[in-house]
Length: 240
Ligand SMILES: [Zn+2]
Image (cartoon, rainbow, N blue to C red; front, side):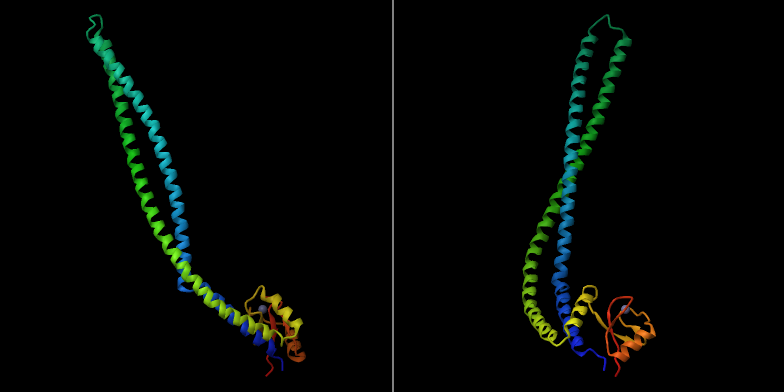
């Protein structure tokens, strides 16, 4: 008889405990909670980006406003000089034309700046409204998250009783297992959820690798447990 009965019983209880743990991480509430957390994080990223946008729109606007005011000042100055020249009999028509051109050029510049400022203002308004919308959505999600977190905690507390029972069962079962074997099991358990597997059709049923016939003969003949050279799981052969 080669079946390591005590260790197999231990492994079964171990798998049951793992199921409780996995189940706890994947309850519908827990899944929703994780989704909400991700969503809230995204919203925060969006808010940061939007406030950066708002900042840069504002500073661009104040820079353009400054340019616009300077152009308007020059326009005022040139216009009043032009009025003075109009009364001056010595002023030639070429000079008058040049003056008019200057004024027209300033006017075009002012119009262009005005348009740019309006566009920026529009962008700023949009960013502000997007920011407010995102913040409201974020606040709503946060509220939902907080409520759900309480529910998840309750689930966890309830499962803690099952976990405790599972731990006790494991402690009991461990007493029946050879300590050296138990240590080997625990070492493999760090890498595999199911450390102990059967040899089936000459293969490790954990990783499906074919085993050397010598290894199989030893397993069957000497009533022992080997480690799979490929995956490291503990192998046993069922001789019955
Ligand atoms: Zn293997």
